[in-house]
Image (cartoon, rainbow, N blue to C red; front, side, top):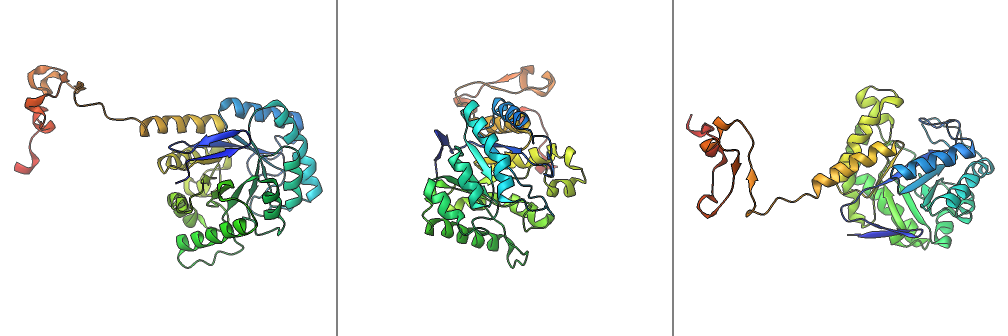
Length: 320
């Protein structure tokens, strides 16, 4: 099991921890926050806010990939993302990711100080992408995607696709320890398949690579709950909590503060241990429900095999 990953000048402990990748779209047409951060100063201000709220990585995109999106030229993507990457790296000590499947955009971003290439096509669209990532020894997020939905055994087919994606990366010289896997929620999957792959996100651990879940405000949440994009926070938080419980390493989200809080609470619960048996165990309830009318039960040698039901004077349903 992979225990850590180094990104830029930071090493992330992956043992029982889930980190937040904050989304920063510098586009006019992204499905959720399009148009809000086109201005460089506004984009940097938002990055600083996400950093202060607990984001571990900032993911910058210069092209919307929502359903039915219009492709953007290489030149325009570079024009949008490079000034923002440079300014963020100048102002914040935080790894930065570029969301692109264009190798020229990736190269320009890496030259500008970017640490991660987040490729929604898993090295399938641009034959030069894997070479660029390997050349810079960059970390890459490789997402499951395909140009059809012709699955036989859905989960198995997705895992087979993912194995091929990893093989493409390794064959190009990308080190396994530089690969993060994304199950691809919202891409080449219908609603039921998206829900299924969310439930099976921990299956990707078999590849011994960190795993990133990206569900934030996506249509699977909107269609499941019948809610517009601006009301999908709770649905996103549910998937983030599931990611923590399944030991997923990263979640990519718009609402950093709320997701960080949900993660911290979930991790606190998961990492709590039962008290030793030589310490008091408190049982709360009305005095008449407790033997002797007390509010504290302390185990000892004489009652170590106690029956909670008898102590609380509950009836034995087996004898009824």
